Amino acid sequence: MSRFVQLHVLTSYPPSNLNRDDTGRPKTALVGDAMRLRVSSQSLKRAWRTSEIFEAAVGKHLGTRTKMMGAEVFKTLTDAGIADKPAREWTRAIAGQFGKLKADKKSESGEDLQIEQLAHLSPAERMAVDALAYACAARRSQPSPDELQLLRKPQAAVDIAMFGRMLADTPAFNMEAAVQVAHAFTVHKSAVEDDFFSAVDDLNTGLEDKGAGHIGERGYGAGLFYLYVCINRELLADNLGSDPLLSTQALAALVQAVTKVSPTGMQNSFASRAYASFVLGEIGNQQPRSLAQAFLKPVKPYGDRDMLALAVEALTLRKDNFDKVYGACADQRYSFNADTGEGTLAGLLDFVKA
View 1 (cartoon, rainbow, N blue to C red):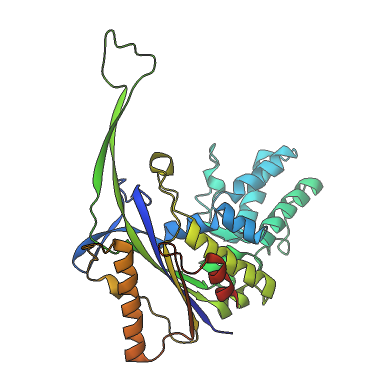
View 2 (cartoon, rainbow, N blue to C red):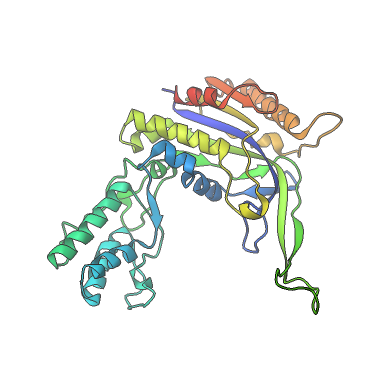
C-alpha cells in the first residue's frame, strides 16, 4: 500500500466571509509579497467533520468535541433524584478523567462542571460515560476508581483518527493526526472589501421616519483558493485499529468533504457554497511536499486565459519541475478538472482507495 495520499485542490469562492479574524473580517496572509485571502485549517477541518456528507459516509464512527460533558452527566444524576452536592462531586470525578476542571466552586451556570480544554471523546468513551452516570444514579453511590478508567484508545472514531487528539494530563491516550491540512489561500492578490448594508423596519410606514431600522457593515472577499492535504494511510489504518473497511470509508468521506463542503462562515449572508474546480491527487511512499510555491508569484489572467486555467498550469509546472529536480515525487497521479470536464470525483475516490 502506498503510504501517502496528497491532494492539491483549487476552489473558487464568490464574495464571502468564510473564516473571520478577531475583528470579524476575512482572514488574510502575505504570500509572495502579495496579500491573499486565507481560510484556516481549523475552520476547514471542522466544516468537513461536522458535515452531513462526512456523517453519512462514516455513520456512528464520529467523536464529540466538547467541554460540556459534565453538564450532561449532572443532568442524568439530578433527573434520577440524586441531591445536588453528591451529583456535583460524582460529575466532577467523571468529567475530570478527560481534563482539568475549572475552579471547584459551585456555579449556577454549571461552569464548575466544565473541563478547561476541549476534549475529543470517541463513541466508546461517550457510551462509557453515559453508562457510568446511569449506574451511579441507579445504585445511589459514587463511581469507583476502576469505573473511572473511562479513557480508551479511540480506534473507532474517524475524526479523531484523522485529525488527532491531545490530552495533556493523560498523554497515553493521545492520538497522532493521520491527516495534515494546510491553510488555504488565494492564488492571486486579494483585497478585503466592505459591504455596507441597511435593514428596513416592516412596520415603519415612513410617515414620521423614513430612515433604516438598522445599518451595519461587514468585510468580504472573493478568490480562487489553493488547498493542500496530506494523508498518511498507514497511520490512519493503525489509528482505526487496522479495520480496512472503516479506513476505506474514512478516506472516501474525507475526499468527498474536501471537494464538496465549504466552511460555514456567513453562509446565510453570502451563500458562498462551492465545489472544487480542480483536484490533483498523488499516491506514493515519497516524502510529501506542498505545491504552494507555484503561487508565490500571484496569478494574473491575461488575454483569453482565465484564472483557473493559469492556476492549473502553474500547479502542473511546479509538479513537473519538482519531479525533474528530485526524481518522481509520486508513484501515481489522478486529476479532475470541472472547467474542462476531464476526470471525475468517482475516479478520484477509486484512485485514493486503491
